[in-house]
View 1 (spheres, rainbow, N blue to C red):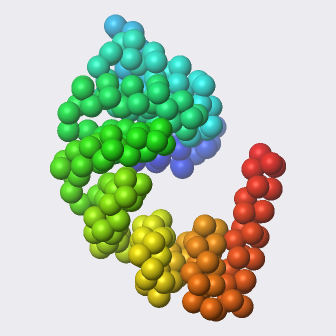
View 2 (tube, rainbow, N blue to C red):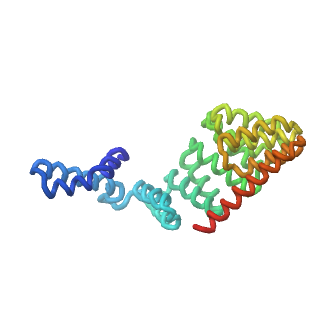
View 3 (cartoon, rainbow, N blue to C red):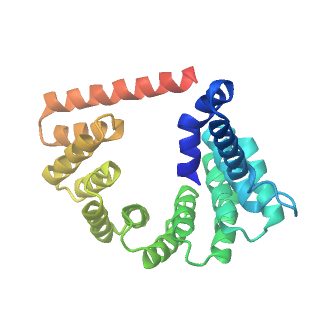
Length: 264
């Protein structure tokens, strides 16, 4: 559906009206058919004899969320669930929206319902783990990340989530193993490099920590937290002038971030 709609969006409507004005009868008929088809493709999921479909409401919610209309997106997903109560994707997306609002309890409930409806939904396990981490329950989060990895063992973000939970539970060595695996899968994963650097610093291996912080910044130069961490590690190694430069850069980025948020 998307490639067809993209085609009409890019060339169909504007050229279509031009054809209506001055084209041949055959061109006009072809254009009318194309416009009718585009309308059917857009509205078919929402308009059926039995009423709006769950998929149609879910698609509408995605479009609304992309526009930042979160309350309307939530309402559309709730309508999808009225039509189809066990719609795993709708529960998952509702969980994501609730988590973005900080409503962690409701987010967790929707992820759990998504998992009950679709037991192999690896992303739902992973996101439930992230919510449990935010709620201060790393032990419970560990179980969810491990289940996600059982289903999809080569997802870098799942290894990263598990490593985060392991580190918070005090298991630094196993956390390092999963961070290294995340980086093997996705070498330019700045957060994984930063977290691995933090683990190395916790072990007192400052040279290795510095290497990881630099790799994080190579992948993401405006990573304020990595600048700050690198500054601390360099200061520990006696490289105070370079450390000051990274502290200053961290402050500059954080200030810019705050100003950007205020302007919205």
